[in-house]
Length: 370
Image (cartoon, rainbow, N blue to C red; front, side):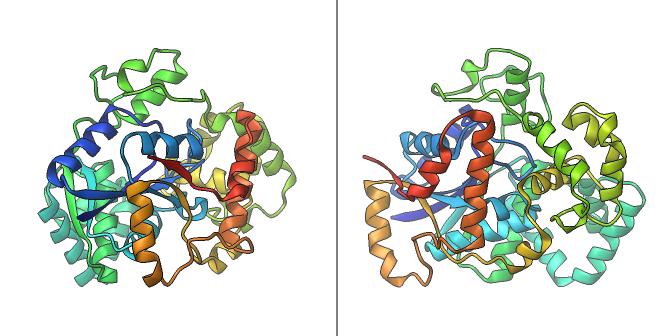
């Protein structure tokens, strides 16, 4: 039996995700699938339109065998941090393959690029910085630094971070790609398979999104804008914004200067974004301010447990088989900063969705599915 790892946010779970799972089952008919799942907030700094519990249940209903939490602290940082933590967990769980969506579907080129960046780290980083300082965006700067004709897009960039983590940590995990069938930036596509970004945009524009989803989902029509008043209050009243993760020197004053001139998150981002501060970086920064995630806490953080969100019988049997060899707890450490921030996430998420996700978080009982 092959042990396959996938890393997803399911925001929401759509036809493209089902396509991804079906392709994995074609490649590995006799396999067990482990999902590393982001929770209430996403890597790009947005609010999940499905709760972590609902995403776990949907995953089980679509024959994923074992669902593991990617904690908030790691899941809302840069691609490298997001990838490193996900691969750390998959390695602990003895994963053999990582299968991810890719626009290029060219794993050999991705591996070649990663090896070059590792072997020429200092020179490569200088080149990337040079092109960023010249005003190019990150994908273009990457391509120019590598001197390669490669059209970097979202999943390929994340794939580079995945492969980099595998190689640098010498994990015995083989990366494989499945070709992505759409462009996540295309908000007008009405095909059966469109990106999650497209679907969320349609939802906010009151369009019917049922054709893009394989099943009914408990979707919340929410975004980071629902927290704008909370954020505004915190930016106005907190004299030490620079203590929060992602808040670099200078942008704290900029936030305070413009906060009373704007009416929503989009307007705020437009006021402060620059070559140095990209759209997604600012969104992540705002989430960290909202959550009160400090730089000090982030420095002291460590992955001291693996939390199981759900499993079916096959997943349960696999856990029982390997748990005696694990050197990390499968029971959340209630004194852990990771755990405390996860509870805080659930509490803040509940402010908008009016549910009791905090109660489920505190129960620490995985969802079970036959």
